[in-house]
Length: 95
Image 1 (tube, rainbow, N blue to C red):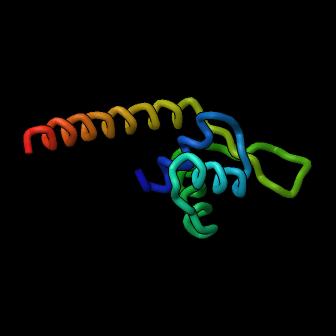
Image 2 (cartoon, helix red, strand yellow):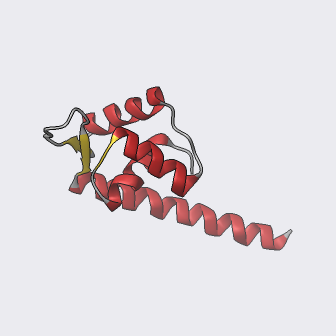
């Protein structure tokens, strides 16, 4: 899974994070390095869709949180990925 949006949603499913923390988390759990342009482009798209939102902070770093709508979308996408994964494994077993 290398879709930046799904990676960001997956990171935020655990806890609220600011951009750099999301970047580090994604690299840790997925082995994918998101550059700043890719990361903040994904954050902007996710925010526009209502799947995440920025939180107020007294710090210069902007934390983000996963919305209920974002959590539901992530669950749907992960279910689709699981179906593809099962089909791929099943088909590999036939080779």
